[in-house]
View (tube, rainbow, N blue to C red):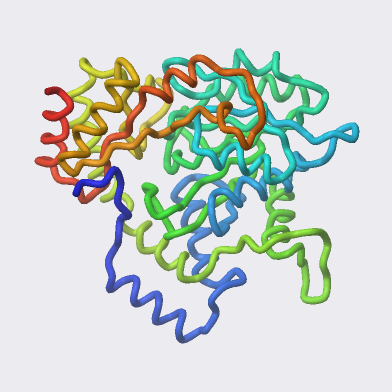
Length: 362
């Protein structure tokens, strides 16, 4: 079986060394020494400041919304946030969970990111934020989006779940907006088994979020505000430190697979148009087939040969019933119906990649 993705497992011996330290200290959570070490190392590696590790990427979004006040009621009505329908459900469900109504606008047909040209017409008195997604790590038009946010006094929270170590114009894409969030789930390029991170623009937002992830507690006898438990534990941090030690090797292997796919498919299959000012992290390899039928047939045919493809992202989120009734967005509907992600993980061999390519080209 060739799955569409597989978690990377680093040196077991090194992980055991970290685990031995955890057993000696008996400090399992509540901002332990490994969480502190991983925070510092990630800030240095990514070239960012004000990074906060949390228990998963979904809670990272929710904490960011609350920290920035996006969830506050406006004129007696729920707040709204403009976002993309072409994403994993957590982008929109995290908004809804916090009492914020997602307002979906269509995507760019080539980059697949939220099209900034569609934002202003969707702004209402209830709008408090824009929540774009760097789709498959591909940077949004961050300057255009920032101009709109500044004009209308809106917060920007980037869902950068796929954008670990993506640079844009020579610096981390995570430095844009009021906050950016990472998913550190087991299947990501860099992971902590389960985990997430928030990168804040302002130090004061980081300090507020530190309280929010710890029940709103600022001191042993002081509860400042309503919070939740979203802390990362020491075992997750240990895994993260081990993966970080080997992440360059992970990236190199992913790039090799990505390059084989691209060389064999770029003239045959529609691929995502990547930002000219950005460096890819090769986290995913999505393709768009000529029709939904061809996409489903290919997924089925490769499935018969024990090769898993994934319709990622499908369905287009404005069509998901839990979000209520929304106008259909034709570009997102079209791309989501025809997209497939190909297998991509460090253990995938060159021969397996070439076999997948041959089957696609049959």
